[in-house]
Amino acid sequence: MRPRSLSRRAVLAGGAAAAALSGCDASDTPQPSPTPSEDPERVLLRQLIADKEHTIALYSALIAGGATKLTPFRDRHQAHLDELRKRLPGEPTPSPSSPAPQTPAPVPKTSVSRLREAERRAAALRVRQLAGVSPQLAQLIAAIGACEAAHALALPRST
Image (cartoon, rainbow, N blue to C red; front, top):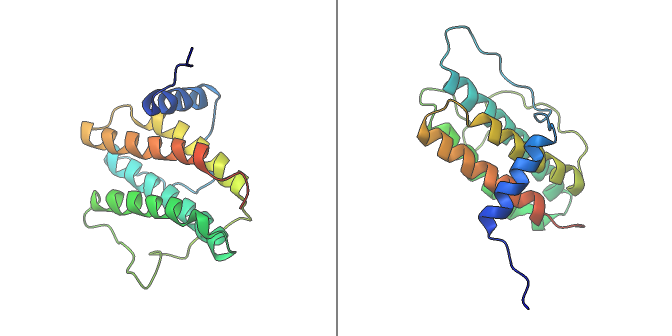
């Protein structure tokens, strides 16, 4: 008898739910402080952008150290970042020659296992970020979370 295989959707949903129930916390990325009258979705978008910039910096540090197999992972995060920035018209965005609009936070020493954990935490956080947002933003956040959950599973065990 052939063992029953799980669909990708089932694996991602189960992983995200398990991570959410495990009490995962947000990444160590500094989050912007909202003002009382600010639109909650704009605040959330800024938080997502800051998180993506931090994740890209972690991947870039490892890639610069020779882990070129991680380039497709980083590139997917860059695509997420580009899409998130489109949703904040009028906000400053970096030019191709300058990777960030302000001085980036120092990148902590990282490893593939730390990246895997960061991806897992991020995927769990995305589940909680879905509450109370527009359907369009919820769809984007869910897609980003699914990608992060897939990264957590797909990252190589050694580079």
